[in-house]
Length: 447
Image 1: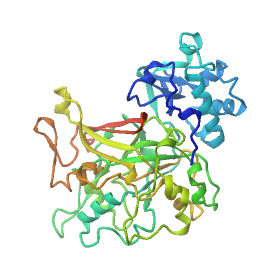
Image 2: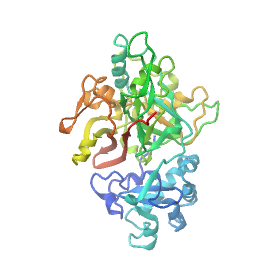
Image 3: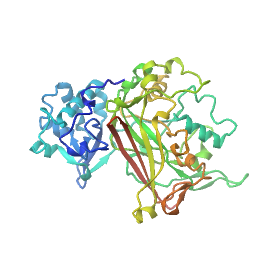
Image 4: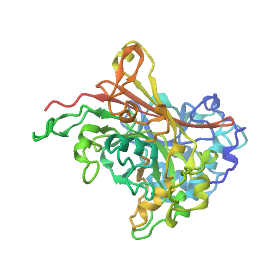
């Protein structure tokens, strides 16, 4: 796991004053990466680093000779940020990622190596986030979604198979399915209610086709693969963490009525592939190092992970103390200027499998993962109703609708609803935010 260093010092302050504000998502200790262009322009996306309410243009900083004291590795890493996505940087590996992080920290902190906030270089390379449009930070070649929360799996199983909530393999193997990378978009992407085929209304009748009536969200964490592995070369569990660059928030939009009809025998298909939203800023594994947490504590009688999934370091700190929340704002709430209402809050500590275990299992058969691949955790749910990470659980398959301000309730999502997911780590005065991923449900297209 990543060791703590000078970049994690909580006493460091940035000359970008907004980064020092209490509760800021993007303090100097964070430095997440994303892709942007100036709103209203036709320029290609560029790679930036969020700091407070500003974005540092990495390539522009390199051109302004801001990394001359940083060394060749940091300069090479900054040069890899000239493209529209982070993929070139990911290919350089952990040493380059670390060198660039240290250089950025020194550039943006109050100190001898930093820029002058009133100098001409700062004005050219530091841009107001409010004036930027954000893009997918990586080119995603493949997307795999796991099912790593035992609370979520148990809840869903209880609804569908009360006599056997968990399948026999669940506690032995990280369950997952291959998603659709082409429909992964960044926060704010349009989310059109999907049309699909659903179970017959009565036994012996034909299935129905139409807009999904049970549209749902899924609160997830997404991990971005950094280092690739060669075909037929599995990644050992002790090395898996070094293959992960960072994390994002992920909303796996789901059509539950379509899913219920199609998922047997091969699992989700059209019920999931119409839209997946991720947050625009990739928070690096290095930034998250102070918030590592032990792996899920298995209950008595649960099997220990098989040898290829067992690693002492991963068990000690392979999880994250990451708070996650979901908020809904209906059209009526927005019209009345009522703030979004929280419908759930939980923590990624509840994941039964760590991301290292997910990645190792994914590659055990020789499958080659590539830089920019996306691994979803599956819905993150906890042991209480308030910590359930999707409406199917929160409203218990529609039988216990969630109360919202103004007397509205939600069993499933309604056209015009805006979903907002947020995440942050916070401990002893340290806070690292993931920002947010949001999306508004649009009506299905007319047939």
